[in-house]
Length: 278
Ligand SMILES: [Ca+2]
Image (cartoon, rainbow, N blue to C red; front, top):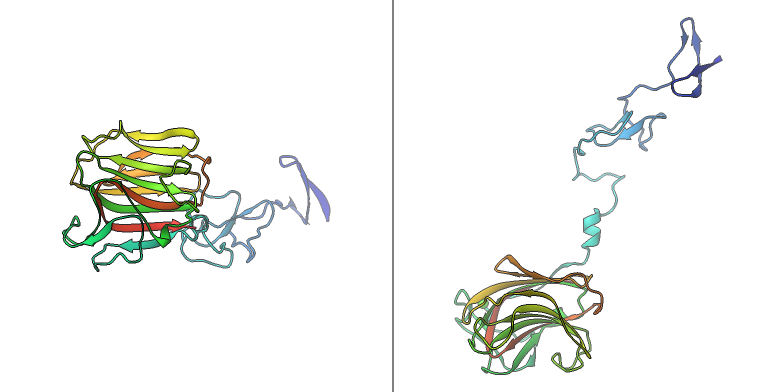
């Protein structure tokens, strides 16, 4: 046994000497990786291959099987770990004629047959003046929420529709000292505005509009709203599936927050779906 010098790699290696000289110290590629994923130095185990083999570098190929877990997989994919706990919290189409599990904050709300967008029952707010606010036990203390519902404003002169995000412990969500975010949709041609908006209210600081959109919803028409609130305080609103307004990340009013639905003057909602994370 002698020492062979390989100038190109600047390393010393031990090798057996045969009549022709030293063997190369670089192991052959393509051999299967060991059970623990190890390979002879300097090779690396290329797990992207159907059968993981020892190679001089990793291939760009996607793993051939992302679905079949094995002992080396982490317990949860990264996305699943982030979304753990976020899922359906509420579905209500009011077609059973009941809304007894809802909390009516400001009266009056009534399930009315044939009022919905598909002529099914809907949850109707009246009378035709003043605040009408509801919430639901599943809408409390949320860190993330996606609320989807159909809504209709019925007063062409004064109707507003709003989603409130209020710190738990509120007594009057419209109170002068009540901190909140709200998403406001105003009836087209009505007395409110000048634009639809997402607002941050931190009394005694004046309202701050964090997103706006031109008023667009006429009275007596059903629209579908998606409002998504995330842990970083951003609120995204879609109307009939299209982006409408989105506020940036905002940590001045940290969660968890309670979710409320509010009309000024009469209106109606139907087909409520909530995904939430507490
Ligand atoms: Ca319905």
